[in-house]
Amino acid sequence: MEIIPAIDLRAGKCVRLYQGDYSQETVFSEDPIGMALHWQELGAPRLHLVDLDGAAKGEICHASLIAEMARRAKIRLQLGGGLRRLEAVEEVLGLGVERVILGTAAIEDHALVQEACRRFGQRIVVSIDAKEGYVATHGWRQRTTVSAGELVGMMADLGVKRFIYTDIARDGTLSEPNFAEIGELVAKTHLPIIASGGISSLEHIKKLAQLGVEGVIVGRALYTGDVDLKEALRAVGGR
Image (cartoon, rainbow, N blue to C red; front, side, top):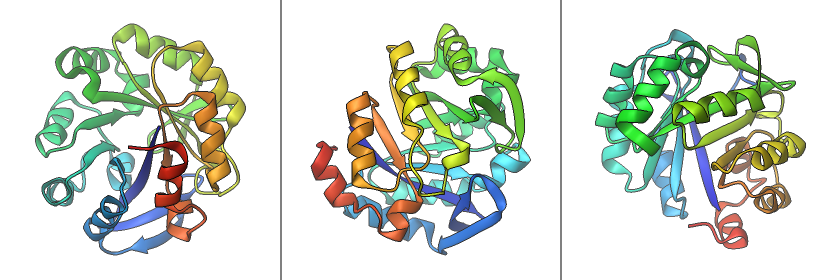
């Protein structure tokens, strides 16, 4: 199982939000590239990047920073946030990012998702961002009537091969993951699920591994020291 450090970008800094709330921000580093190199040195197999400004505006806001990170870091990158046009997907892949993550587009533009999957295959990932079981879009600020399970089924029919599940209410809280929902999603699909939100201990990571997820995205817990990346990688045999 992969353990994937998260680097959330806002105003050129590495930050973490509380439950996706832009008004509850903690700045952990003013040098995101240095942070990427730090996680690489500790053995991270890939990094999970979120363009928070892009998610709010619906367009890429940190292209030059992402390109520089891709050039200097020698591990794989995946990026989400504001990717709602096929041209934006192409641009990000051209920056050296291995995977792009679609969130709002998964709800609002099925034709885009289908064409992106046709052209780029497994480089396309869909993010299932849910609160109380229902998917939220536009930087987690707009709630829909589509359940997490329903969206997985719809996206699989369009050719999506991998998903990231985030429980918004737990993200950045250091509480615990939504084990029940994650387990249900894993049971419903044969496709890989990456879990995110609420992870605050090595025991949480081990339990998620037992549920059968392909990977876990860890943010705040790595920055606060609640989770030691090297120890976690050893515990689950992370690449």
